[in-house]
Image (cartoon, protein in one colour):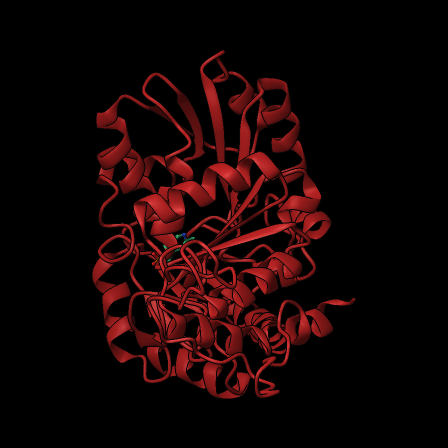
Length: 379
Ligand SMILES: *Cc1c(COP(=O)(O)O)cnc(C)c1O
């Protein structure tokens, strides 16, 4: 099945009792048993829920994976992966990554005795140099947030295999429409479904997709044991969002290109970060592993002053200033004080994140209106 067909049909089946085409919201915590232990495959909704099962199957199919697990948030999904580690283990992670991922690594798991190395992954030799016999996990985010660096997933998977470590790829920015990490050698695709996958800024959820049966056993154990599972209503919303993922992503990419090109020629703009430009340092890798270049763009104004960036953010009318990304509506953000405030200033500067950087999540409105809004805000 091709992508658009999978987005609409994979994993979902008409309801056997009524024929309902749309997956019912099984708003129940528990299920009747005929005799102790004799049930229809469902016992308690932390462990299994039919709405969640259909979503998990749809997610697995979209990522070309065998298994999907859904969580109450992207962070709960990431937390589940971290449970695979034990004290003494080491992790090599992208240095320019989602602030919440950096926070859970350094504030929750480092104190428990797990060592994290944050390295720029443009050069895989830098990753290889950090590998030790204790390396158990390589954590990649690509494109990175908010600098839109691109990391070569296939190359990272070679290093992970040599190291005998798992490779997890946070695929939130790309979605399986643009890139399927498991096909490139990753072991786990990680999602905040909150963003493009659900796509309408109306729910918070996360997911993991993978192939390996041992991983299924371990990760589903932690999913149930730790209990960060989503409710059926949220699963329904994500299932509904997935049905238009391909259409939304196409428009996000088209509008992203239009906005990136407009910003690049603007006399007040110093630099635009967008992997679709041939001048982007990792454009060739992006062109190789992604189907298109997405709708996330960051830019810095000439003079690089935080107050100028804030003045632009305050003037936006369509690009609403808000946390999050990936919804149908355009959003703007100031990573240094918002999404990435939990990363220390020194670490931020080291990874090249300037205090005047503005991040845009380009929505699926009319591109002309978006460009008019940029024009009036930047001046
Ligand atoms: C938002 C986000 C997360 C965290 O997901 P939540 O759903 O907010 O818990 C993780 N990684 C990336 C890249 C994100 O953008």
